[in-house]
Image (cartoon, rainbow, N blue to C red):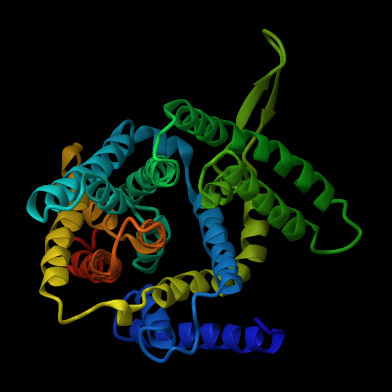
Length: 407
C-alpha cells in the first residue's frame, strides 16, 4: 500500500467508526455495533473503500491487544478465583456443544465429508472475547459477577480454539496429526498463562521504580507498551493467541494483583498491588485504547464480504439456518450448567455467543486450504455475521429490563 493511501484509509476507518458509534449510541444501541456496521459500510460488502489489507489488520491487532490489556488491568484474580470452576465449566461446554452439534448437523444432516464437518464444528467453537468485553463495557457491566465468569471462560475458550485450529490445520496441510506436538503447544500455553503475569509483575515494579526517577516524561507509557508488545510476541512464540500477551501484561499492572516470592523457609519478597501505578498508567493508555480498539471492530466488519454470498442458493440458506441454531444454542446453553441466578445464567450464555474475528480466522483458513467450498464458506459467513451483530442487541434488551438492570 502506498503511504498516501494508508493515510486516507486510516482516516476513513477512524471517522466512520466514530460517526456510526456515536449515531447508534444516541439510539441506546451499544457503540460496538456502530463500529461493526462502519466496517460493513466501507468494506467490500457495500462501498468497497477499504479492503482487509495486512497493514490495517496489524493496526487492528494492536487495538485488540490494548483492549485486552485494559481487561487484564480491571481483572481481580481473587474475585475470579472465587468463581471456582464456573469459568472452566462454561468454557468447556461452550466449546464442546457447538463442536459436537456443528459436526453432527454438517455430517449427518447435510452429508458433508467427515473432515469438512469437523472443520465447521471447530469454526463454531469460537468466542470473540474482544466483542464480548466491549459490549459489557458499553452496558456498564464489565465489573459484574457474570462478566468475571465470562472473561475467564472466554480466555479458556480462546486457548481451546487455538488447539483445535492447530489440530485441523496440521491435518489439512500434512494429512496427519502429531499429538505430541499438540501436547507441547498446550503445555507451553499453560506455562505462559501461569508464569507470564508473574514475570510481567516483576517488570512492572522495575518500570515503576525508574518512572518515578525519570528525567523526561513518558517513560511509564513507553515501557508499558513495550512490555505489552513483548508479551504478545512471547504468547505467539508458545502457540497462544497474541491477545493473551496483552491480557497477561494487564494483570501485572492491575491494582489487585500481587504475590510473594519465597527466598527461603522464612524469607520472602512481597510484590504488592500498586493502585497509584495502575491509575497513572490507565490515564495515559486510555486515549490509545479509545483510538485503536475501534479499528479492530471496523476491520471485523470489513473482513465480512457479504458480496461473496450467493443469496439465491437454497443450500446456503438451509445450512446457514441450521448452523446458526447450533452456534447460538451451543454457546447459550453453557451458561445454564453452573449454579448461578437465572439472570446471570442468561447473561453469561448471551455473552459467549459472539464469534467475530475468531470465527473469521477459522472460516478463511478453511476456504484458503480448500476444505470449504464457496457455498460452505458463504454459509459460515452468514452465521459469523449474525452471531457477531445480534448478541449486543440481545444483551442490551436483557439488561434494559427492570430485573436485568440490577447488579
